[in-house]
Image 1 (cartoon, rainbow, N blue to C red):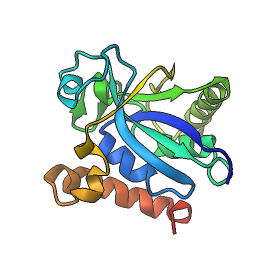
Image 2 (tube, rainbow, N blue to C red):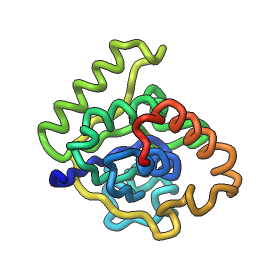
Image 3 (cartoon, one colour):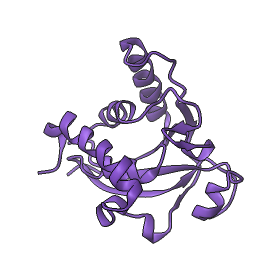
Image 4 (cartoon, rainbow, N blue to C red):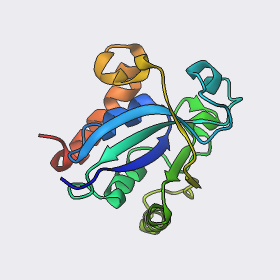
Length: 179
């Protein structure tokens, strides 16, 4: 196994995003949390108040010999709406923004390349507004947010929003799922 690498992505509610990326072959771990803000060790309540500057995000540990960073980004861009500023569906605010928080210059270059390719493919009618920002700090969310969808599939938000999104992802990327 290659040395694991880290990717930090924001694509709206972290319950959806974690459930998607956790199912991918080559992904060793996904942690829900907060990044991109100015408050030290923020809580969910603080982030939801829109006063911390943080985005709900996930941090992915992955094996680049099994799944590349660029493949993670392609999946990222096709499993949320990267054209809505500070919004994913009914979740509105800067904490739900679309963002790639790169850990080094190679990741920055890959993020810009893949964002450009997705834009050129014309998958979306509107321009992509995903921010590409240098990674600074990541704060893991409270324990009850980890593996939230797996632990709460019948919770109303999970049943109405996360479940259908995960089902669509699993159908589209069936060949990339963990066995």
